[in-house]
Image (cartoon, rainbow, N blue to C red; front, side, top):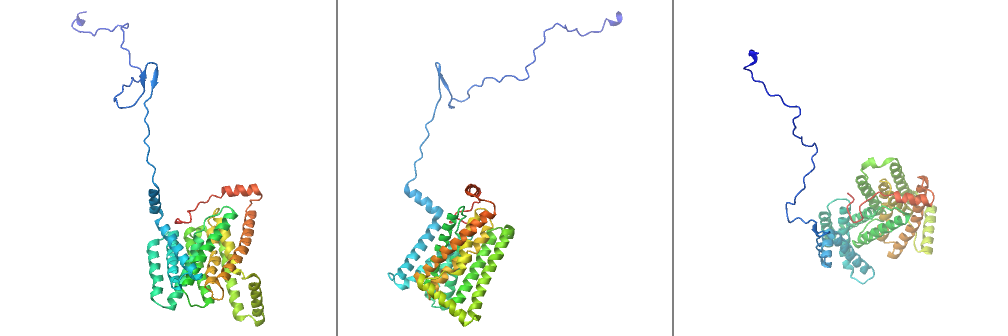
Amino acid sequence: MSQYRGRRTAPKRSRWRASTPSPPRNPAPAAEQPTSTNTPGPTSTGNSTRKATRTPSRTPSPSRIQVWRSWLARNGVLALGLLMVTAGLVLLTGVWLDQVPAELSLAGSVLIATAYVGALAARTGARPLPLAATALVVTSAVGFVDSEPLRTGTAVLTTVVAAVLAVMVTEPSVRTLHAVREVVIAMSVAAIGGMAALGFSPLLSQTRYEYVTLALALVTALAFVFRLGAGFHGLGRRGLVIVLVGSAVVAVSLAYTELLRRYGSEGMLEQAATALGWTRDVFGAAPRPLEVLLGIPALMWGAHMRARRRQGWWVCAFGVAATTPVGHGLVNPAYSMGEALLMQGYSLALGMLIGYAVIRADLVLTGSRGRRARRAEEAAALRPEPPRYRPLQ
């Protein structure tokens, strides 16, 4: 045992010694004490609890002057354009009624042409103010430079701009009645532009004027629709058929009219003149075939289709076949103002009947039959577009 005397051994721990309790795994959170006396909270008074409430501050309602100022800040250009069109229309109407000197007709035409150029630029996403200023300078030069080519060219451009703008200001129409409204608006815009073109007193060949303005308006409308419809990708099979059929109708109608005028026999020309004269004597005017068969139905059907498919823009492009002849009838010296307006009224009525038939046939062929099916289809037609006074892009 001597070999173990000098060694120290660690004392043994008792197995019955109380061990220190370990802290719990999920300790309960300690009661939070309020750190700030400014924070509103419940205060106990006896057995009731009362919450501190704040009275909301009332913001003063804007006055009527402030409302008008904010509206002008947002829509100042629109208000200026409407004012110019209204002033120009008043001047031209006064000249027509012999209540205003004839020299002021040029001023009215300048105001309307400038406003139309700015409106078309704004609608298609361009800069309206620079283009409107350029149009104001060019149209005002007609009054200082007495040039027949300048007056004629200004009248042609005014007719083209009015015809294209009349198509561009239309909105998608869910129902047929809305499509009728859009056609009436488009024809009214084109009629005001035709009066402005007449105010420039152009000296032109009527046949050449009709061909040039219709061709320029159709090309311009198709160019704008190419941008709005996402190029040829948005054309589709239906749109391709529409473009081909519309182009064929325009080409055939113009070619037939020109061939009949140049190479038609004397008997055939005499019969056509006799029928036209009888219609004008009995009804006061004769409708235009191109408007009735193509222009107004295309504009009406296109506005109805645009609420459902973007191919409707390609149909609306052929609506210039209805808006361009409005200026033709007003500028033509063979027609009086009353006869020209009556002719557009007849064309509008007959064209709307054909447009209604085309819309009904389209709805039947696409599967919506019956009143309930039509209402369901109208509720599902939710393809939005900006309003007529906002840019399309």
